[in-house]
Length: 186
Image 1 (cartoon, rainbow, N blue to C red):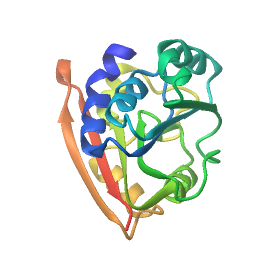
Image 2 (image 1 turned 120 degrees about the vertical axis):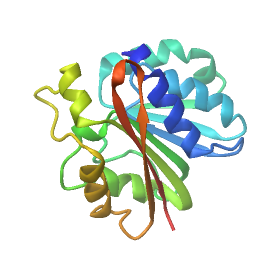
Image 3 (image 1 turned 30 degrees about the horizontal axis):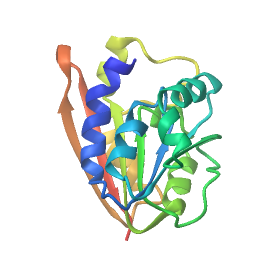
C-alpha cells in the first residue's frame, strides 16, 4: 500500500502548501509516510495524526519514532467522525484514501472543517471509482466511492460548501486515476 499511496500522498501534500510554522493534521495516516514528510515541512509547527487502526498506529509510531520523541509529531488513535483535536487549531488537514470510509452524511468533513483555522486548507485524495473497481479495493467498510462529479457533489453539500473547493484529476501509473481536492476555509 505504501508504494501505491506514494504519488497520491505527494500530490495531496503539494496542494496543501505546508509552511514551516503550520500546525498540520493527517486523518487516517496509515503507516505514517506522509506524517514523516509533513513533519520535515512544518519543522517549526506541529504535526498530529489520527487513525482508528491499532496496526497503522503501531507502524506509524515505529516509522516516526524520532519525530515523536522530539515532540514534533503526535499520534492519536481515534475516529474521523469525532476528531480528538481542538476547534480551530490546525492550519492544514490531509486525508488520503480515507473519504470512502466516512459517513455519507459528511460528519467527518464537518469535523475537519471544525478543527481548521479560518484561512486553513484541507487536501483530500480519492482514487477514482473506476480505478477502485479495477484494484478491487472496495470492501465491506467502504461506504462510498467517487468519480469527479460525485466528489464535487459530496463536497458541495459538506461543511465546506460555502468555501473554495478545487478538484484536480491526476493520472497514476498503470492507467489509474485519482482525484485531489483542495478545500480552503474562509
